[in-house]
Structure formats: C-alpha cells, structure tokens
Length: 263
Image (tube, rainbow, N blue to C red):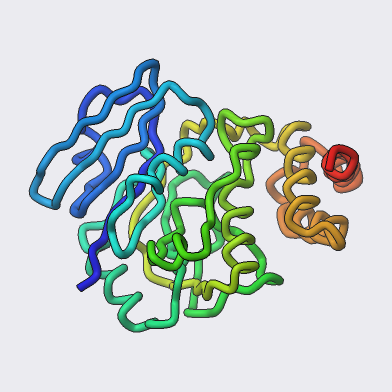
C-alpha cells in the first residue's frame, strides 16, 4: 500500500501548528529554515511529523533537506502557504494506482489570487519536454524510489533565497524528463494555494524577466530565445502596463546572455 508523505519547505517555525493550518492528514517532513539547528518529531492523527531545522538559506537547499529525510512511497512537494483538500490522500493514492507507470504526477491547486492563477489541468495527459510548463513545486507528487534511483535534486542556484528568484521546480522536472521518468498532468484538485505573500515574486519586475531568461537558457540552451517568445506571448495580460513585449524580451535576452557568458 502506498504511503503518502508531504515534503514542506518552510521558515521560522517553532511548533507543529502548520499541520492543522495546512490540513495535513498524512506523514509530513517540515524542512524549516531558521537561526538554529534542531530536529523534532510529533505523532498526530494523520501520522508522523518531522521538523528538521537548519540555519541554511535558499529554497533549493530546504527542499533537498526534506528529500534527505523522506520515507513515504509517494511524496508531495509543498510550501507552507497551501491548504490540502480533505480527500487529498485518497485522490493522490488513487491516481498513482491508476497510472502504474507514472513516476511523477502534476495535480491542480486553486487560488483566489487572479494575478498568479495557474491555468487548470483539464484532462489527463503525459508531460513531455516540449510541454508548456505552467506549474509550481507544490503541484508535484512523485514516487520516492524513482526519484532516488534517478538521483534528482533541487538546484541551489534558483528559487527564493538564491541568486535567481525562481525556476528550481522547472529545472527539477526538466532533470526528471532527461532521466527518463514518466510524468503526467492530472485534472484532480488536491488543495488551495495562497499567493498573497511570496518569498520570491515581487511582480513582473526587471529581475523577474532577467531571471526567467537565465532559467530558460539553462533548461533549453538551443531554443531558449524561442521559449522566451512563447512565454511572453502567453503571459501578455499579466505584464502589460509594466513592460512592452519588446522590453520584456530584451530583459529575458539579457538573462540568456548572462547564463551563457558564465557557463
């Protein structure tokens, strides 16, 4: 029987109150970045909660800490601003049972923040190298043994607290595809995310577009310019009024040049 475990990146926690806040009903690993080093456990109705506290900084390091302590057969990557639906354990377990070849499944989350609302997954499909991304780390559920065998970890160069503000989740999925892991998009909704506060997103700023160019150059070195154009064309409504299409593209090209110059 599959055991579900949540791997949650969080900061400055002093107790296990996130279990109730996030409506967690399964085992959970909290990778907690604070100003100390500590380990604690708590038994609760849903299972066992582990809290690994370090003084490190950067979401990539934090997610890797959670991975090191993971033991569930199926793991869900999480941030502490989501709340799971009451039936997420059953929904995720059933999806993996129905897709025995799936190593990773991307699930839906709802949000009330229109500016950062994700395009919903409307049908079950395979996710491939050329698929449009449109996901975040919290959408990801995976078989732990498959990820461990493929030796996939999160980059410490991208994400909140790192040099480049986002992209650690996209790069992780890209590495999984390169390793031959099978990934699916699933239309089931397993929770809600609150985007009111973000550790990395401060609007569609100059840094946002430069950093986006960097991650595209890393993931798609031969077609990063084309991928940048596609991204801008499909997100025009979000950044219009701040930058023109050509201005945003120039910023992304600056990021592409920066990555290629230093790699």
